Image (tube, rainbow over all chains, first blue to last red; front, side, top):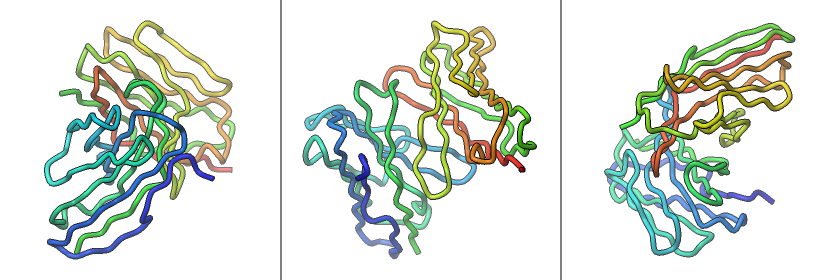
Length: 113
Length: 110
């Protein structure tokens, strides 16, 4: 089984809808991350969490929120989706800190119409 | 904040040739430089990394070089194979920040 899983893998929604993307990991890591990938822009960090009680904004947090339900689970929410949030979203984990090997999930392709 | 530029955006080589991808960064405080490979439909996977106290690191056919003075680092792949075809991302990190380059699509022609 995959170490980092994401659900759903694909989602199409409409402007204004609330969307939640979920991430689970079995690597036992404390550090978890949410990234967004757009063509020509690489990956950009949205939020990160170093443990269950720790949530931090990344480079592009506006319009997003997160919840760290347990060490193994980290969810990303779009409270009111807009078309420019159409992107590929990745969850990742690392053992020590951000300057460490990050293990990525398979991604969620989100389309906002 | 940190800015990472990556070149070229696309690279096509013949099987067996070498491939070089270059990145520059803006924040001299950056001290960790990973390279990730992303295959179609998958998440990125770390292939090699280097820290600022090292100038070069090699792992079989893959090597990374770092020039701190010029603030640039490069990925070198020798004896390329078709399975090396993928998108490659460089990144630079300082503190709790990680910034990625825009990616290079490498195609290895048999």
